[in-house]
Length: 108
Image (cartoon, rainbow, N blue to C red; front, side, top):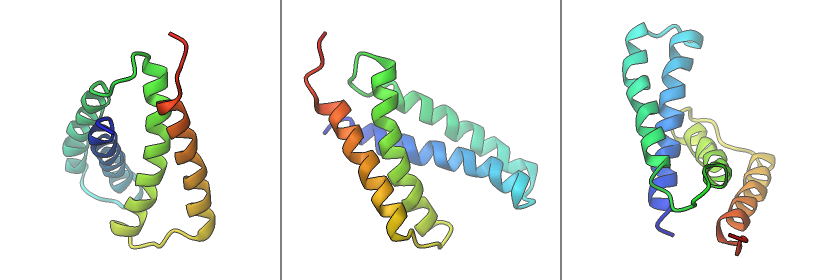
């Protein structure tokens, strides 16, 4: 469970960083949005290295499920668009997959 202390803020940092680029290119925001976005993306990368899997690929795969769920949370909270039942179903399936990857007894 300690990993969730890193996966969730990592996801928010990545989404926030990517959103700053989205805002600049798609929403015609100032290029100044890129600076906090770059810092946010660097924070994302740092936080992801704090997770426990010894294999980067396994850590990234687990993170992917968390990222999908947090992206829908972002969509609802920041963008004000409620995820539909298909979004919830898809995210739930991904989250189950992430938990299988994280908690399974892998051969080491």
